[in-house]
Length: 569
Image 1: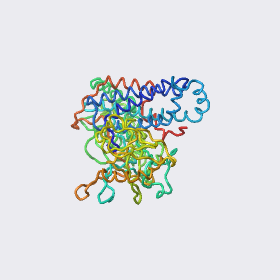
Image 2: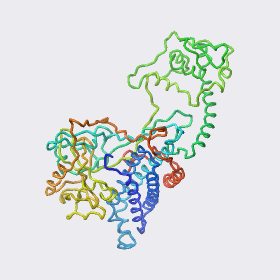
Image 3: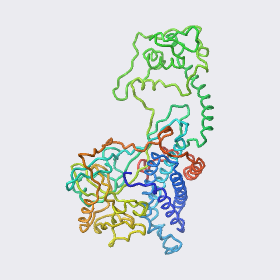
Image 4: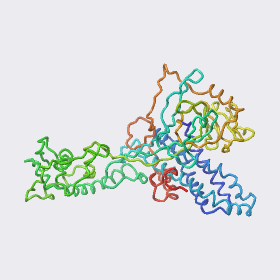
C-alpha cells in the first residue's frame, strides 16, 4: 500500500466513527446539523464493522480491499480533522462540561460563523465514502460467480504515480513509494494552492497537506435500462439469471421496434433474401457472406454508411470531435425507391432478433466510424488528504516522508513500528500509546512560533517510505520542523529509508496521470484468488443502513466529494 494502509483500518475507522458519535451524543443543546451528523456517524460505524467482517472472513478480493482501503481512509481523514479542529468546542457541550450558559453563548456567537461549513463538509465527505463502499461491496457479490452484472468499475488515483527512485541521496538511490503529480486534477481549492515561490516553500522541514484525487471509471454494457451502480441487485445467482431472462425477453421486443423504425424500405433494396432461409440476407453492395437480418441492419449502417446517411430525413453532425473530419454521403447516392409491397413487420419478426441490447443511435454509428468510443464514463471518487514533510529539494519536485495518524491510534497496529517517529507541535512530545512498544526513533518537534496547525497526539512520521511530490501540486502549508529537530529528522531518514539498487532493480514507472491498481468488477471469475462468496445478508443490511442517511440515491455520482461538489460553502 502506498501510504501504509492495512486491513486493520476498517476497524480503526469504525472505532473513530464511534468515538466521534459518542462525543456528539454527550453534547447538550446541539443544533439540528450536529444531530444529523451524529446519525450519519452511527451508520458509518455499523458499515465499517460490516466491511471488516467481510474482510476478516476472506469474502473480499484483493482488488476490492485496495479500493475500500483508499475509500475508507479518505473518510477517516475527514473525521480526524473534524474532531481535532472542534474538540475544544465539543467539550463545552458535554454533560459534564462548563454548563449551559457557556455552551449556549458559544453556539450563539461562534456556530453561525464556523461550524455549519465544517459539519456540511464532513457530512458530504462521509456520504461520498458510504456511496463508494456500497458500490464496491455490491460488485464484490458477483466475484467468483457465474453471473455478469454487465458493468466494470475501476477506482483510479489520478495524480498518483507508481514506484520509481530518487537520484542519489547520500550515496544511494532512494526508493519512492509513490509520486504525487501536479499536472492532473490539481486546481486550487480552499486552502490548497500552488506555491509560486517553490524554492522558498519546499525547503527541508516544511510540513504540508496534499490531496489524492480519485474517480470511478465505469464501463457498462449498453442496455435499454441504464445500470445503476448504486442499486445493483443483491440476489442469488439463480434468481439474478431468472430476472435477466425476463428483462431480455422484453428488450428483444424493444430492439425489434428500433430496427423497424429504421428506413428499412430503402435499406432492403441493397439486400436479397436467401431462397431457403428467410432469416438471412445477402448484401448486394459487398456480396459478402450471408447475414442474419438483425446483423445485416447494423452492417449496412456501419459499413455502408454513405448509403445509410443519404436515407436519413435530417442531416447528421458527422464531424469527429478531434479532427473535425466530416462524413458526407456522395451526392449521386439518391434515396432509392422502396419496393411497393415492402412491410417492415413482415421482413423482420421477433424470432429474428439476436440480442437484447439497443441498436446504435445514428450519432453512435458516427463515433464507431471514427473509432471513437464513449461507452465508459467517469464519476468523481473520494479525495484523501495526505500530510508530508520535505526532506530534500529537486529540480521540479521534492523528496518527502509521510505523516500518519492511523485513525488516532498512532503506529501501535503497524507491523513496522520501528520505522515510525513521533512528530508534535506541543512543548513536550506526547507519550507513546500503550501498544507502541516498538517505537524507538527520536521525536521531532514543529516550530511553535511558525504559523502552523496543531498536530494530533497520534501524528507519526514513517521513515521507511519516501514520496516524490511535484512542485506544482496544490498544497496546504502546515508548519516547519524546529531547527533543533532537523538533524534528527535527516539522520533518521538517511538510516531508515528504503533504497534500491538501480543496477539490479528496475523501477517500474507507472502512467504519469493515473494509477489504476484498484480495478473492481463482476467479471473477474477465474482470477485465482481465494475469496469466498460474499454473504448477501450482510451486504443487504449494509445497504439498508446506508439508505437511512443517503435515501435512494446511492450512486457515487449522487454524492460527489466536497472538492468537486460546486459551492460547498
